[in-house]
Length: 168
Length: 275
Image (cartoon, rainbow over all chains, first blue to last red; front, side):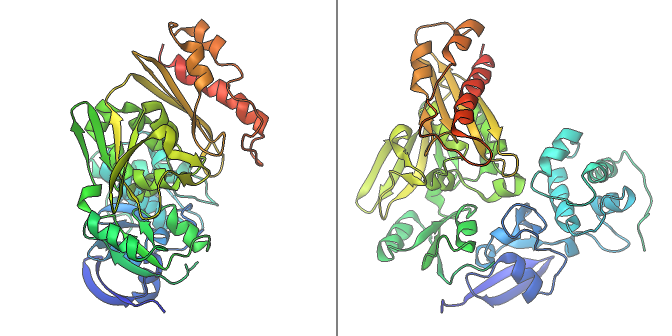
């Protein structure tokens, strides 16, 4: 059996030191070792984006990164991007604009959309659709997801002064 | 899906990576991992050791040397698509890279990884051929430079030998007006066919990906346009039967004949953008 490796990974601001098999995928590290099950395994083939997290500030598909590759890095998951009562504007947008139906793709959608807005705070509809090309929704369709991202962009740029609508 | 077991080592330098590769001939290099990890999950690859070269300083970054754009092989797509030197010296790359995968894939995937993998439907190989790029390859005994025309040798097969590492990609800066036209696979977004064209002072260089076992130059097109001005008439006359369907790729999405047709159509569209 392959030797285990020691990794130091900061997840949602909290440092962790863990012994992992080199073949452990980051998504399984998050879900099974740390119990952070908000990050989903969808297709497990780098296509659907349900497993999207931020690795050192960039959206990545955590089913296609080994935990050992994240040694020394910071990871943000859906659990760390906002909190009840203090939702991230993208989370609030999905709530307000009904950007989901079953919700399975939602954590990945939100992480990808937050990354998109970090790079491009005022995206056109086309840029939002292109930017979410790596995230599949198999029930709602994408219209309300695009509206949710537009809502978040407006909120973050101060164009929309919406109260804490999604508190409970 | 779990991969087969493997050991993992981080290379601290190019020399370190080369000696690890020599000690472990069955090892694989890991940079972004976006071709290798999916293959390992499907158990199409089961290396005993992964040598992580993603942080090797000699393999990273973009710089100009004289009139040559030099790209470290472990530079990510995202770094390239947002890089101003690339935009100025090789705008074709800035155009081609957003066609690859999606933002998450581009945050991890690297130019050298893609070129070494040599997927017959990848976008970059066509761009490398049209730009007249060269690949710098390092082995234990020294380095050599290989023209893109000699680098791609077959399906998933390149000029890289055992124990060698692709270290840099050298691209002549702004060799002419540039364009890429692609017919994406409806599900995977890989190129069913993609055509890259560069129109410079010495004429047109054109290359296609997705059509054959590996990316290749469209020499019939280049010859048909040699010494002619680029306009709607010369382009329409040149973009006919550029490749014979015989031997081209065929699958559920596109027959070999349809691929041959797409080559003509996409070459014409790309060239018309340069007029």
